[in-house]
Image 1 (spheres, helix red, strand yellow):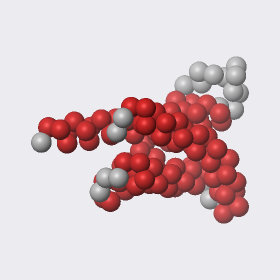
Image 2 (cartoon, rainbow, N blue to C red):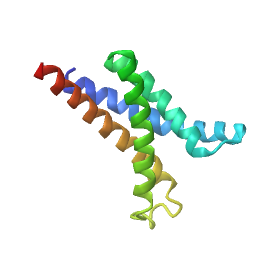
Image 3 (tube, helix red, strand yellow):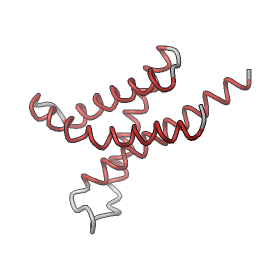
Image 4 (cartoon, rainbow, N blue to C red):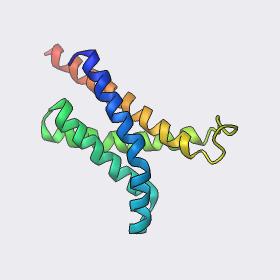
Length: 123
């Protein structure tokens, strides 16, 4: 996949992460579930859609990568907000967590993509 196409897809994915977060939190409130579980499942669903339409790998690899990236990116975003780096700009750390999750997800997708390319070309 060309770098320009990947950048475009990552930009769309970034926008989807940012725009779907309030909807997922609202859904979590209506279902009365933990917000982290709702966000994790929602981001895993977004990752699945991305994996099947953009990457077109095999089914098992799509599912494993999607779930792992959703969970790990959410974990990293929470750890990043615990650093309290942007308290002056975001006192409740909500925007920081949302942006960090989106950025970590995209970075992790690129790492997985590069690993897959390297393994595929090494054969």
